[in-house]
Image 1 (cartoon, rainbow, N blue to C red):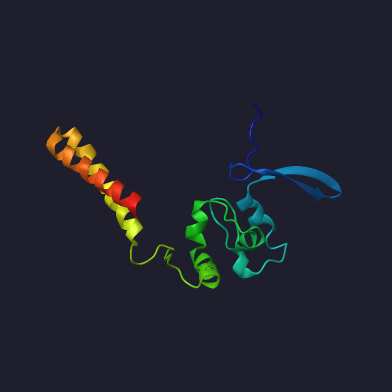
Image 2: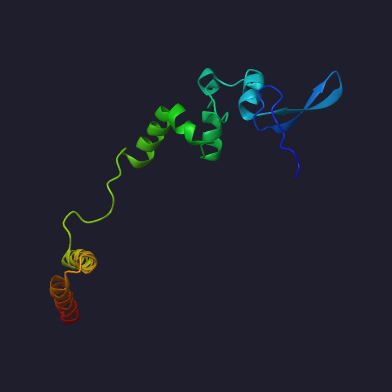
Length: 149
């Protein structure tokens, strides 16, 4: 297996870049953060875009270009940018879901059926067979009602 290329400055996983100096081309390995530190000023980036994730080197410009953050730490580092984007896209910061506010009759039956099955399993584990028989009968009754509806 080939050895992973490492940044010449910090030792993290890196990509190869070609540098031309005095007419001579050299290959240098840099991680995204070190690359950004070395070349951000030369690329004429604005001051606000100089903020980069210390873990992976992702910048807000990278996010705007790809729509992806580089690592979990990006969500902490760029929290304000992320919240601003969410507000503009969704209008809210809190997810409200799509389930109806009041459960429908069908949903109530399904939930009741789930609870009865859980109670039945517990009654069998507890060897409370009389109660398990009552629960089985109630489940059967619900099934018959559901077929008749």
